[in-house]
Length: 280
Image (tube, rainbow, N blue to C red):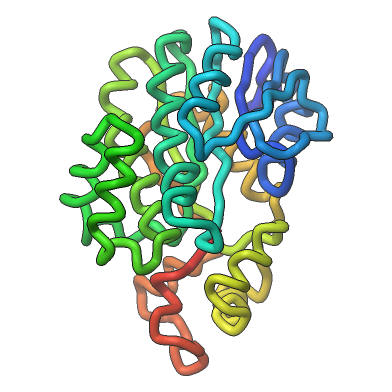
């Protein structure tokens, strides 16, 4: 029998491919025999990608230029790039929300039936239902700058800008599932908890080490390895997941399950807002 996950003859685009989950994802795609791997990142990519396109995903002009340089046929788009709240609000919302949306809009017509899009969201976006009306209003604004202006005009939504951006990422996945399915394209997202990547230093700055240590203690005593998230991404982008569409997949070693069933040790939690700031 052929392997369950096989990327032979597939052209794949990966954003945020230089480090962490993105770098592990490129390795996994190469092992799965992807024909052509294209990395999009503002940083140099030293992994086994076939092509690297430098792109600042906080800049719509740079994204449009990257779209113009990409091939006419793409089988899988991994919107994996993400930034933490240590950067300005417009950068966080641009990279984490508007860039994936713009890449989907610019590339879906080049994707044949059977193609897939996989977004990297976060458990931090799990509270999106509380702000669904506002998020849908934001995502209905097509213009990049007007969308960011709207976010700045609603400061109550961005007290935790990283969490809000990942709520938007989860809703974007849900919102796009039906229209993309009409073209034979699936879209899903992964929602990791804490991952042992270079970005963890930014979360230590924005959230504080005590919170991260507490979350780790409630997640089996360890953070996820980048490859563990990459494995889920590769699965969702493959034909093995051909009937999975519009799903936000939790990858947090049971952390969210423990919250839902009231099995978390809140007595050791160092801050009241810990759960609203959980990160990927």
